Amino acid sequence: MSVIFIAKAKLPTKYVDFDVHVFMHNEQEHLVLAKGQFNQEDVVLTRVHSECLTGDSLFSLRCDCGPQLEFAMQKMAKQDKALLIYLRQEGRGIGLAEKIKAYQLQDTGVDTYDANLKLGHPADNRNYQMLGAVFEHFAIKNINLMTNNPDKISAIEQAGININKRIPIKAGHNPHNQHYLQTKIDKFNHL
Image (cartoon, rainbow, N blue to C red; front, side, top):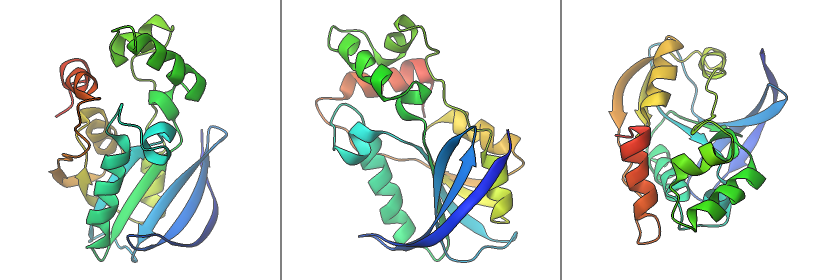
């Protein structure tokens, strides 16, 4: 279960210019966008974001993923040092096709938590094991973390990283995702 660094290049975005790094873990490619040079004393603004093709790329209103990513990138643009870890684990780790099947169940009134269970998956099958290796690669020990997810906080702390401050993300609320957002609070314990 090693994490292998693959490549690095410049990636200008509409928010800021990043260096994009590709890592391989469990036969899956993951991206890390880095702004600035880091050392162990730095407190680095960080977002760990799981891929959501429908939200991040297709601007779906069913979730708040795209707006959360956009919020994070806007905040990162204002910092000298920032890190966005983009994990390729679509649909809380169940994959795109299964996520669309979960959407189909949600269309009948089943919430996002129970939809995954009905499909035979854990409610949240995401894996954060590679985070420690990524932070080590960048020599980062201290972060300000943009998240509402307590599982990410636990995974990062277990990797030995100090979370100096949690920055809540309040973005993407709309009439189409109110039930989804309430389920995240009620069943996934999001903050």
